[in-house]
Image 1 (cartoon, one colour):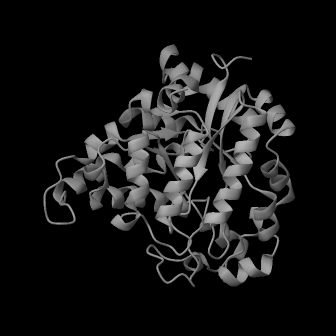
Image 2 (cartoon, helix red, strand yellow; image 1 turned 90 degrees about the vertical axis):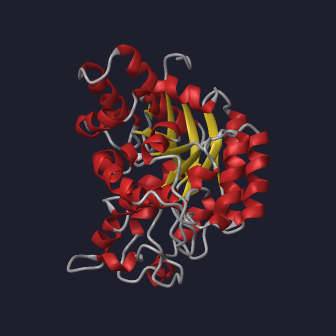
Image 3 (cartoon, helix red, strand yellow; image 1 turned 135 degrees about the horizontal axis):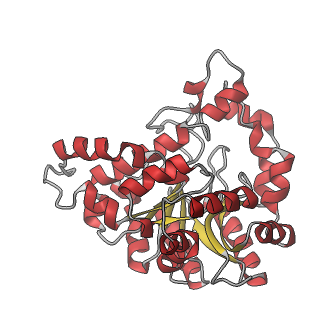
Length: 347
């Protein structure tokens, strides 16, 4: 299998043994997220695959015709994480895996946005080592989103280095987080088991919709006005934004005013076409991608799996269905499969 014909996938997770061990303290997680059971984070069937960045992972990649994975650390749900030290440790784990199998793995640098100086230093180090971009959780450990300009030095550095930022959902902030801006995990507790509340607060829907809102906050704050060449990647078929695209455009036309009262010169339509890319991570239905193709140019869509939360085989089956669906032609399918990623990541 060669790079020319195998898939390139951009949202493929791992965890370090240290972060997995920290999540074994289930009581600490329950104290941090009262009323919400997030114990599924450390299911043995997942953690065994998450910690492996070698032989078994490559076997799974081969089973789904994946030539190259871009590694990124999975979200965590612990107090004050990710810290700068945790990010460094995770990035070093990825770097060693890349060194051992450079034709199979590349990496996105995980950064602690609460310390901008340390984050930029870590970013520059990892890009110098061959990492291809940035992997950011949707909010900081204490619940802040990045529309506050105090977080913008990392975005400025990414634009300068001409590398993409992959903005990924993470667990809802703890109710103990004073700066939680879109509500805490406990708001999802209800008349059902806590483990259901845990899923509602995360992968079932909530963290996708909150990431979508985050993009609108970034646009409304003037981030893309300040950094017009910024590259942002969204997973999970665009976190719901493609479905609501027309409604969003209509709404934002009414209020396209920057933070200082000046009208923004770059519309949301412009940002959508010039600053955003999208992956299929964990979304293997033809309906959602048909919606995407109505509002996104095919050159901006890239196949991804969300490994190990989705399997490489199920992803391959989806790509085969897409190929025969009539939704895309051969050239567009090859772009989604690997060529668009090669262009964005300069492989």
